[in-house]
Length: 236
Image (tube, rainbow, N blue to C red):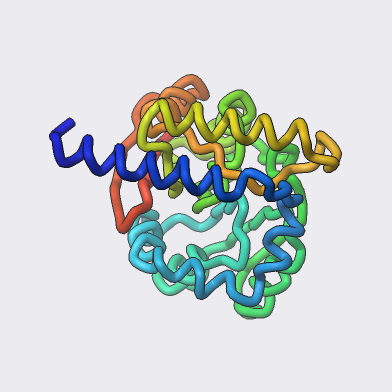
C-alpha cells in the first residue's frame, strides 16, 4: 500500500469512527421498514451509482434469458439490463413490498415475477438460472449466512452461468471488525425480535468475500471496480 493509499484509508477510518460515535444512540431499524420510509427519495439517492448499474448490465451476456435478482428493490440494475435485452425474464426477491410495488409500476410490460420474501429462504432450484445477481444488498449479513446462500446460488446456476455481485466492501480488517462489533452491541440493546433483519452495514473485505464465494463452490472470481462499487463476477 502506498503512502497516499495508507493516508486515505486512515482518513476514512477516522471519519467512520466519528460517524459511529455520532450515531451511537440511534436505534436499529427493521430492514423493510427502513426502506419503506425512504422510498420516495431512494432512486435519487442511489443515482450516485448510475455508471455502475450500466457496467453491471454490460457484464451479462445478451443471450441470457433467465435472471434471479436478490434484493432487487426498485430495480435500478434491471432498468439497465432491460435496455440491453427487453426480453430477458427476471425473478426478483426482496423483503420490502413497497419497493417491489414501485418496480412493478415501472415495468408492467416486462417478463417479471416478484416475491416479497427472505432470499435466504427462497427456493432457488437446481441449474435453473443463467445468472443470479445482487446489487448493494448483501453487505448487511454475516459470512456464515452468506456461505449458505452462495452455495444455493452456485447450485442453482446453469452450467456456465454467472453470479454477479455488486457491493461495497470494508477497506480493511479493522473496518470489518469495527462495524461488526458496533452492530453486535446495538443488536443486544435493540427491542426488535432477534429473527428480524435490521439495517446496519457489516461488509466484509473483498478478500474475505472472495474466500466465502470460493468455499461455496466458485473456483474463480473476477474483480471489476466501477464508480465506488466493486463487482465480483463468479462463474459456475
